[in-house]
Length: 137
Ligand SMILES: Nc1nc2c(ncn2[C@@H]2O[C@H](COP(=O)(O)OP(=O)(O)OP(=O)(O)O)[C@@H](O)[C@H]2O)c(=O)[nH]1
Ligand SMILES: [Mg+2]
Image 1 (tube, rainbow, N blue to C red):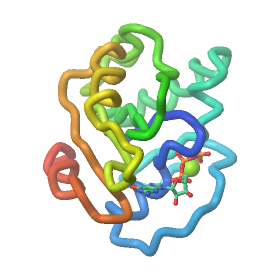
Image 2: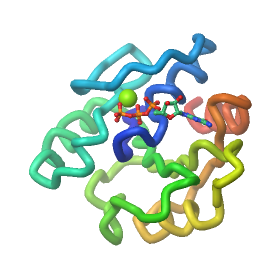
Image 3: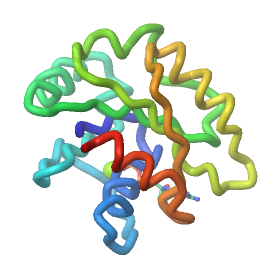
Image 4: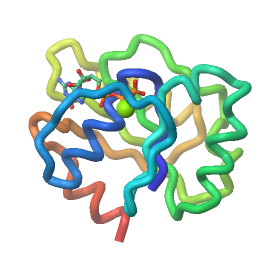
């Protein structure tokens, strides 16, 4: 699965949680392959000129996860962004453990981006990880 999402949205933490690793923060500086997951730096979504790199990375994967931070008040996804990929898409809401989170708003952003299958997660409280793993089988 390739993970796409804005800087700090929780992509790397989610991969660590799915792999049962301890969460340790480190800014992702480049597209990173680790066997099951392809992690991307948030800048690749935030800078439209870098979309082509996301599309190239998606070629080698089965599923693309669009990550939306549940505390985010806005979306970086243009309408129907998901249709660019021609892949199975999963919308992943992150940080639902946070008091300031609004998972319904995040879900709406992901639907505008063109994703139908949406999973709500917390890498800290280990919410939604099993559901996400099932989507990857
Ligand atoms: N409360 C809470 N914080 C989280 C969660 N997931 C990630 N964070 C925090 O959010 C911050 C950014 O997380 P990362 O996983 O590095 O975000 P990223 O999407 O990989 O960011 P880039 O590599 O910059 O694109 C870190 O301080 C994490 O601890 C979560 O589920 N709940
Ligand atoms: Mg990262």
